[in-house]
Picture 1 (cartoon, rainbow, N blue to C red):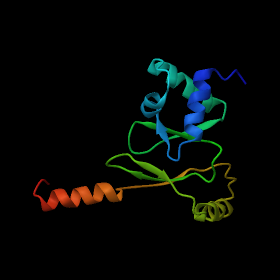
Picture 2: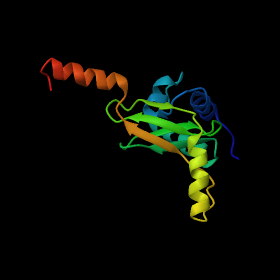
Picture 3: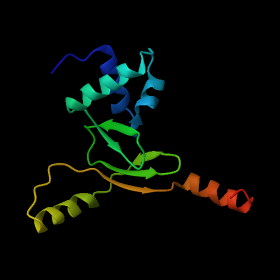
Length: 134
């Protein structure tokens, strides 16, 4: 493995300590020192290539980065505000096992997520409807 520079270490620490996946822009905003954004993307690419982090893209073009240390990886993603939160109920593992057995397939990894609308966005939409804004 190539050396972990101070920027790579800081990016990795931010991701490992975050409960939710982070976008490159949000990581950039959390950094103490402000390198250029392309340096953040290069660091993310390096960390992902080394298997230290993983990424996912939901219904948007933004990639979200999360720790490869936390398993299982399951998410709820709001398609309005793009807030993403992990959940850890283990039903996906038993489901994956059934799928693998029924299709003679060896599953080596999975990321499971639901896309919908979070409670906060839902309440705002209902309020907007009641106020005649929608």
